[in-house]
Image (tube, rainbow, N blue to C red):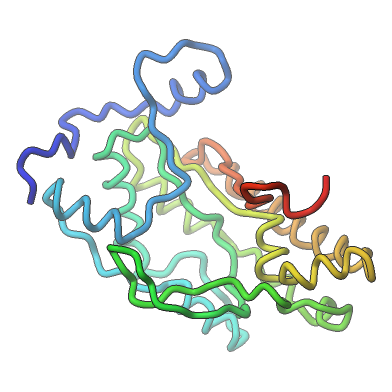
Length: 248
């Protein structure tokens, strides 16, 4: 452990209400407020164990376990018991680092997608990382659209957010994140397929966006009904350094 670290903060004193009012222009900030869409587990583990003196729980791939249930046609729970230590660790990390809010992903059923695998060359490596399959996703025609289990993606999130309500420190809130354009382009249709279909079958592209948009909207609606959720942190990769992915 690095003894000269300033973290964990001795008195974090989070205030999501102040953070929100600053964003809305209702008050001037008295300090720098931190916010993140997400910090990788590997970074949280390194910082927690090297700088703050508390051990990270094992990073169990709960997404893969839920995906197995989905493929088997079983009910997918929004919260698994083995997921709870990871959520508690996430909250403790953001609290100890001085954040006012904790980002979490919108709980949705994880479905099988096409992807490539390659070596993870990061300093804090996972060993293997996945890469987007850009050619074609899992919906390339109307038959695949009709056979996709749209009605199984949204989950009953009551237990999930009730648990989050129990572990959030006073003054903090959760920010729930998901994506629209990125999911359609990267996973559902694939970028190349989507670009072609914009010209050859625009109705299919619209139908996919509409369906996924309805899922995200319903998920956000369910999430913000819980008091522990302070805001939506919607995120989308809509372009790159030279322009947008699609002409505006």
